Length: 32
View (spheres, rainbow, N blue to C red):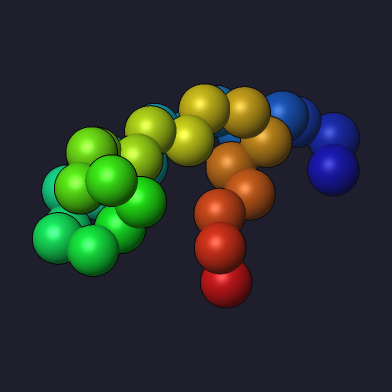
């Protein structure tokens, strides 16, 4: 983990949360 990755994941799938796009910005850690 020498470099910190910045990823923007936009998930606009129905049923995800309140139906709002999920934007994950940070260490690139998303629900696996």
